[in-house]
Length: 349
Image (cartoon, rainbow, N blue to C red):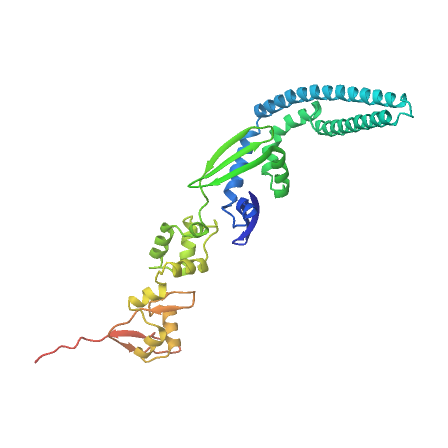
């Protein structure tokens, strides 16, 4: 498995990609898994595993391994001593041979060289093994690790720790993680020291489902649009505790996006279906200019219904009425009003 990062909604999202087919048969990757849920599962497992009991057990196992390694080091030292003795014996044999007997001298020299090569190989192997054994923990390091069991959750969850720092901590604890993508994602975590743990988690939802607005929010927006503008709908949703898929509060623009995505009728369309008129249409009916209609709406003579923003509105029809103009004066004035016209009757009188 190889980890790559892909930008999703402006954020870097880790993906775990299986590259076995691409390496062996030059084919496309056989599976890819969005890594956020994987990271969360591994983090929870580490926090559960880093307990004092688990650390003591690990240190006990490492102590037993250290004892066996010490026995192996003793055996290697014995082999080195034996090889040095054989090389020295071969050297003395070569030095005591008659130089005139070239066949015997060549054979003894070849034997001496072979013993020296064996001694050099054993010495190199001993040094490499000794350097690897030095990585084992001493008593002071073991005490510090025991203290880390209390500090690890705090250090792991510290926001100041960068992802690279968490990766380094993870590399010290986990050997590898094997993922199998089926109906669910199977994880097999192999810790350093040989312990393995198997997990199963649900597959992450596609981004289309994650971004999908819950049905209850869509229903609530449809209900609020009967009496509210987009701005008022957003305020009502925030007051009632609704959030979008990112956990952010609603804005008028987000309400418009949801309304268009689910083909909900706008506030303007609903008012027009109820027979509301624009200022220009009502002005033509009453024989005045649209500015006068807006002024009468602000004065309360006409009933207006807002839509869009605070400035746009439609007006309720006034019906079969006639306009009675107001009169102004220095000491008193009469505002304009509407008088209902009598209904015309048909038939003979």
